[in-house]
Length: 534
Image 1 (cartoon, rainbow, N blue to C red):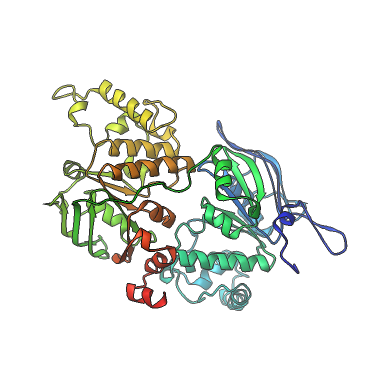
Image 2 (cartoon, rainbow, N blue to C red):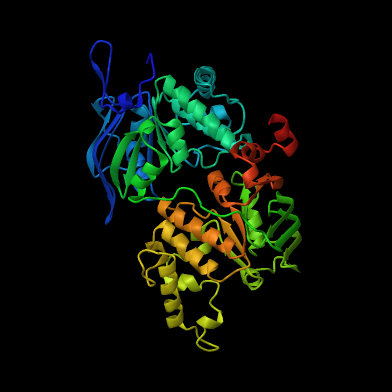
């Protein structure tokens, strides 16, 4: 391509060549339908993606994005419809057919062998024949060429387990390019990256576009859509509702297309007025069963009437911190709750934490927050079944009282459908999260621990959840928030603490920092180094 087309030109069904011919779309999906039992995941989806562009696909959780991409990559077979690649009808019964058609996919959870080298991972499944040494030699030469052409710098002899998450993602991209992919699908690619790593990924994608590659970017982050894509398609409830040039839309318009109504994208809150110290943590350390130190001398405090956010890439000790404070794991050090020391031994449990005034919305609502086969009313009583208002007598719970309480919580937290007898697995992710929040917040805790509050949650439910967290703060409660979404941390928190490798790298007032500074701390740079680069 001699010049970058305008957004309007990229939206066209075909771009003219110099001789008057037309370039067909790199990808054209026609009338794609896919059902799983009674659930229609994709309903008559048609979309055109022009070559040499970055095309975003967004939609709420469960909108059908991943199903559509799984059909394109051969993981699922469509019930109806046609796939056309570069103007040619191309059946894709499996992933090998997709690879032969020039399609590569980088999954949210990487498909790499941890104790293999970069080179070994790249050729795995694409060997030239029985002579592995010949395959490795050819791959080394090709990797060097690809790394130079696409500006993807990775040591071919490094073991995957020794690489950062960002570098592992680059290996996945190199794997696809090595298999001669000219169409690249990326599924939620920045979910495990620091801001700096995400910026580097976007530079790689922009370079791939300049080289004529076509990129399909699946993400729920509107800021990323606006920053890197040329065109964006919006899905809602299994249908394609709109395809627009990115330059001709806005985050607010895209949010409305996703949800079907106006959505407040930014949290509106007054400045915090912190009061007394509710939580004090000193020298908190955790070593796992394998002898690996997960927390290394953590010091922090949370006061009444403030939200303290814990930022960091997943796996740097945030989960262990919540587990200790929630009574799920043992630790050494000291934790004071309203001035009283908490038991940090293996004898501690969630019940003792609840008695101390701590409520906990865990990071994984399916594993720790809900019993999916139990009804909503049973899950509302989960952990609080011995509360006086739920007791009929010394031996029996008052199920009618629990059901009545659940109806009230469902109404106040706008849980849909409003059915206290529906099993938890029958609710969407956002409504499941509302059930957990209602159970914990309405216990009037002094401290709310909340992990990944909007993970897998629709954008409309995100707005509601954020409002309730702020309302709790404004009622004079202390909130400790853990999230891998830096936008969420900056939007909700009054103070931000950054963790890296089990340590606290720095603390900032939200009003006095930005994504760049926090991102450097998340990458393990000390406060001194951060200041030196400012």
